[in-house]
Image (cartoon, chains in turn yellow, green):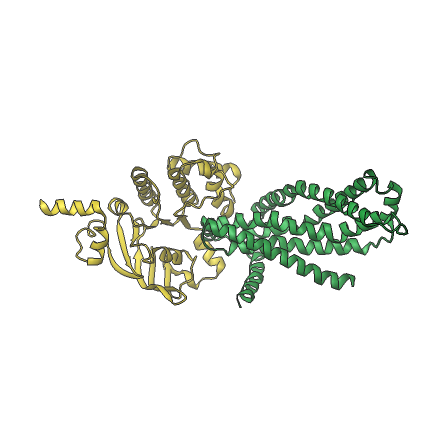
Length: 253
Length: 245
């Protein structure tokens, strides 16, 4: 479980996160949604320790992350898997080497054992015949699968995904969403997904946190989000023509 | 003020590069890869430039020896002094700032743009140690490149002077050995060693702290070349002033 208490973060005079308090449950897919510029990426990067918060606390299973020294922070970071928006695969390494990388850095496994473990997760994310290819030689959807495989190879306790299905076609996006949800349940990990894709919200939104200009404007799940009378949330949800049509159809029935 | 801030940031980066080390096994592989990219990969261009510039130095010297009382062995002497003291260590380092420096800046900068550095940091890896330290170690072999450049520069001068008909082999070799001061070799390698550190760290700094996209990677490479060249030239002045004057 990850808890966030009164988190504030600004850059110069601009305050991006204005005192966020929320929690993300274990074994669930937790979604952070909001318009571009609402502070989603800053929020996720603050939780990951890539940005130092101005104030507030981030607790990983009760341990305050920001109070720890580098070595203790490293111990928590070893338990974090991250899927970046652009996959962030290492260009100079093959798919298999990318996936084996966390094992190389943090375990004492022999090469054969690492390869075996990598092949297990490669099978898990349904990547076939790509072990020896470079990231530039595979499609965007496959790159996302490699990024997921790399994130889960070292059995993380926390999985962060920054817009995991951006730039993917709707079918592949759904496949990736479902894969993340299956992995969350299978490994019983705390998964936090940063997205503004309403299809993801409908598919896997077990807990949803809606950000508006650095504030937490609403919390709920995928069934509640379509029933809420919170105007900011409804404006966001029904800004898509598809959802406008769905609501129109529902209202006319 | 920005310059002072950047200079401070550069020294903090160097400090950070040497702490929280990456696993030895991984580091060893990275160092060999960097030696291949930065040192072995530069040998061809260094050999080519050294040989021909050495030849040009000899021809220029020969063509300017119009006074008959100046002995022809001056061609060998002047070629040796030019190549060992300035051409090989300084001029080649500026060329390397373009070749190796832009490679370092653009590769680290691209890693920054594509969030690969963030990926390293999320994993709890000291990204500066992982990315910059192997480059510093690899560049410790740079003086070997300069030794090859010195040899080929003088060889080029010999071939141009002797086979070009400007002097005889005996005269050239006599000039080459005239007034040889062994400390000049120490001076040349000492400054080469300092330049190698600048060549590894200044481009890394510009790549690591860049922000933006592909266009900014290009701009960072250019800026890194300019600042590495400036640093080499200024350092060269002070080292020469301290050691030779």
